[in-house]
Length: 351
Ligand code: FES
Image (cartoon, rainbow, N blue to C red):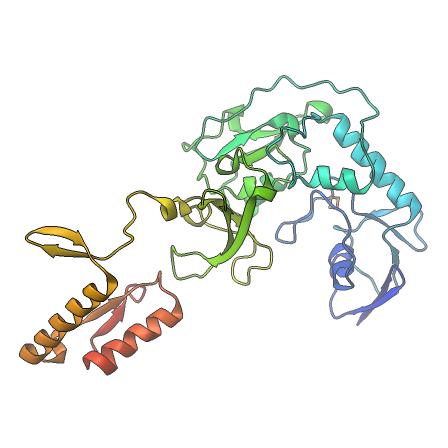
């Protein structure tokens, strides 16, 4: 057992974990901009600094493992002052256009500046001369808003294994960009959107959400309909126009965490598609005609009855889908066996 104390709260750990995660276990959220539990700690932003009794200098809690006997303080006046100065440095190299930034309300930098009372940068801002990259279908890349946290680089490398982005340069002229500094395009990027979802500022923004403020959207938790994995995410609904704007991942999703595939993340637009079937169609005189559900189900039941009477139950076979829930699939096989009377039932994911 590893016994530590965080802000006076004793904690026992069965195995060493980093101090940032240990603090979460006792309900303390240490501020951070470059940490994600799904990625290798990077130790770049230094906002997660904490004091450890007996050590002269503060340490980055994201990269420091808990050791038996540690006494940790996460929110002393000195630590808060360091965090304030770090935030001051970050906004000194950041455009202050929060009023019109697409990330307003969901920007971690903005949230932390508010929390620590950092309102105006103390140092002059020298805007970089980097054009906006919006030549792809899913994201806008504004490198002037990049805080070099490296989350996009690591998620692309460690989760997607695509290696599309990399840190380039040093100091104020360092940036995160693609090989050859080309605009992001389908030629070398899978457009999965993981980098957009993990970016803590307005450096990478999802085009689907452009023009919406987060408080205008209602989040509805749902299960992805595209395959049988059962990933969970939030649909963001524009309630005024009854339209799904886009998808955001949720950290507490039991199967996928914050990870989503390209279909789940970007293709729920079918929900409001004009081409979507919203009523049954029955073919009459060679033409599909809209019908009520009662009419359609009655027709199917009658035809099934006729076929069964003439050819027997084994004239039927049923194929179910991985896109359905377990409950749907259970009901389907039950229907085939108990109602139709055949064991000819299979599932598209089996082969
Ligand atoms: Fe630890 Fe950024 S979260 S250094």
